[in-house]
Length: 383
Length: 222
Image: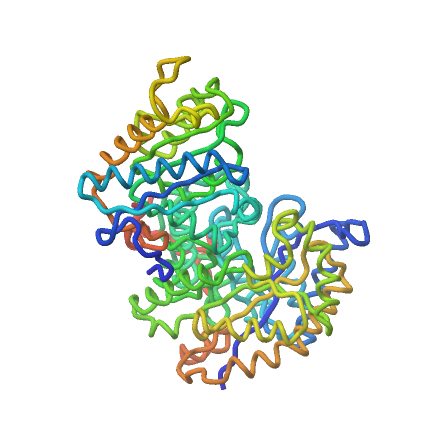
């Protein structure tokens, strides 16, 4: 029985509530994020993902701290990122942090690589935005090796060379976390995902479906080219954005004041225009079901659908109600509808369990230090 | 790769396409009037060289709200996407703006700001402008030409400026100065644009999703 994954992703923005007229504190926003993640698990969603940002008004600068805490308070939900900045983070630290998280979360971890959308983050972390693609390519190539080779010798353009380096802890059960690559309009990133046989996520919440279709099409074609399976077996994820009430007019009335002044699209298009141009759906649960059940008509059977639910200053209580509706009224129906006519050989998104099963079971891959002083075997012929 | 490729466009087959962008704000607009005449004259001039061409007009006024939406959100409506593609795929461009405060208007600049990078590289362009009096005529050379230089377009030497008065002097040299009448200047600009369009090699439009480098090269840092 195949099954799509459904989840929510947060940007972690601290945005004024235009209706209540107040702005949460960072402390309130962080605690709210934890409650939102717990709610997602409670209503049966599969994935909770957090963004990574390094400037106000965003709080999630330290995703593994947040996800580690949530991991301890949940049992089933997969913890992910949307996105992890592969351009400005040190891939060595990503390898270490997420392997640690993977151990603590019992394997309930995957990641989505992205390049970020805030220009100054590059210089703040000592990088040059003009190298965005090159950074993503080189740093991911290193990360990929760090999780798969016990001892890495490496030299590249963007970080100090490594000699005899072992990233610890080694991945849980000998299986690295599954990786998605997120990109809106860079074919090189779709190519990167295809090259490694990794997942490709198109965060289409600000894009018309025609555009999404083209990027996914390119990824699928190249996934097959690199021999990971047929194009329709590639691992695809989409973004989404909804606001629901039992009566669709109530949903529109309640969401409009948030929409009208929201970061990113506020003061621009009308709610009606934006819902027509993008996957944003404001209405009844049935309208959301109809809209999202049709996504696969555009991009083929896919593996993961994520929703943005907690932005634009929506109060926590409202967000929790929205997640409740999503988890209890929308997702169960979408699960059934998406399973209809889905070929049996179109895979689910890989999970830790499926990846472990694919390699014939768990392996302990602990690297033990050979020398109590340096942590490594003495180099022969050195000195 | 692109399923929404419009008919025609900068492809080896089909008629040449002259995109005509008009940033006039009123309806009817003298800017649009000039734009239409420049477009027609270019098609006529190409016809004399045996080149079949057609005009695709982009009236920016009709896209004003959608342009603002795209500025703010990055999302282009279907109409705006079609307009941007029509210009990006054209064999030649006629670009006409009213002159406001010594320069093209904001609507005109917004449209060209939202074109994909490189979309006009090497594309022949005829510039036109309108204003109440001829005092603003140098705005074509001082304001519009630098914009198209930045965009890498080939702007032809003649820019066609129409003051309100010019529409009343359709034949003969004006009595108050020695400038050729508007119809002659339109024909001269169109002739120059047609010269460039006719000899320019037609290539398929760039697919923004096309891979231009192999991933192995990227991995090697090349």
